[in-house]
Image 1 (cartoon, rainbow, N blue to C red):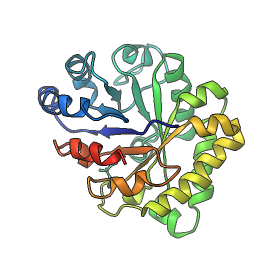
Image 2 (image 1 turned 90 degrees about the vertical axis):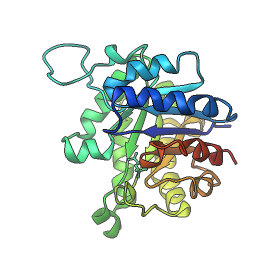
Image 3 (image 1 turned 45 degrees about the horizontal axis):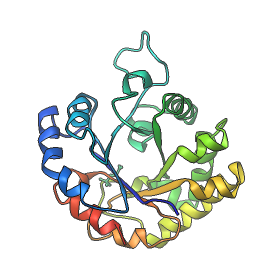
Image 4 (image 1 turned 180 degrees about the vertical axis):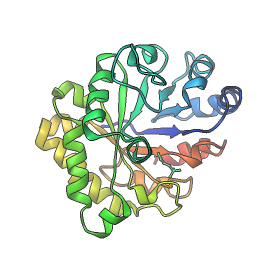
Length: 251
Ligand code: PGA
């Protein structure tokens, strides 16, 4: 019922030129993979080149962040108006933005509303730290992040969003959550919370990705779980073997 969705989060990697060469190298192979939505999320300066290289392709393009105001005195920021028409997706509330750049639940919520108002599909990131995980706080923390992120959204706005559950301890560490751990948190702390907020029809329509050390070797495991609809992939999306990873996601 939900089309699987794998997105590559390139983070602060690849120059504009390197980004375009890379998508040219992998685009036709990605194109040939049916039954899955695919996106790449390059750094801002590479967005126009990558978007042009993928024009007319079914491989989507996303930004990694965005501010919520339309324009003005916000040095260093990029607005939803600037992204509208350039890309389809925008990653919001990534744990690196929350931890290193002071992003708050409230700011993430404002960004989600602004993205939706500009026809951008938010990929809303949530996930607990190692300390929270070890203290048994995962469910309450992740549920709280989901409630805060989706505050004030209508049912139809919520249905458009994608959620990425990314335990912080699994990001870039090679220590991925087991597929059962990921499924448990995604079901209890994301899907059930969305059901509570928006009802079962909307909650069943929302795609939820797992993220954190996803590789070509473990993606199929995650995809077999009933509530995991795809992955947000960091390190493994930077190499041409990303094509194999996406292929393995179609089970
Ligand atoms: P990783 O990153 O796949 O390199 O762990 C995932 C992410 O941060 O989105």
